[in-house]
Image (tube, rainbow, N blue to C red; front, side, top):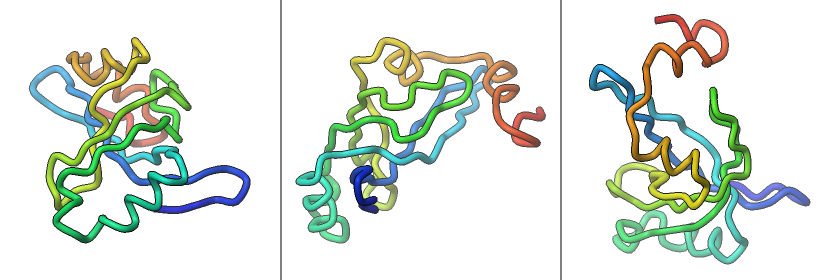
Amino acid sequence: MMQVPEVGQFVRALLPVHLSGGYTLTFGLWLLIRPDDLQRAFRIWWSPEYAHFKVNGWLGNAIPPWGLLAAPVSAVVRDPNHTPYCDTSIEPTLARILTEEWPHEDVLAALPGDLGRT
């Protein structure tokens, strides 16, 4: 979690992308959230209540190859030992990313530097 003056409040989140061949690429990203949600996250992060944490926010990072900076997304805790997972979105492309399978060659080729080599 972090709060950046004059920018906003953020929590870490995971965005899984299902790839062809049965693979999954999971992006770790920042999720911009409202101030009261940051306070709630801080209050429950290490408690049993965290297992039921849900938050609405906006992507704080662009996701290659789609971009989508500031796309709205809802995140939920799927495993209390992990940061929340991006789960649903009203943004059509992000909704598809969260539910469909993508050709791994296309997604990996869009990653920066050596990360994109298959």
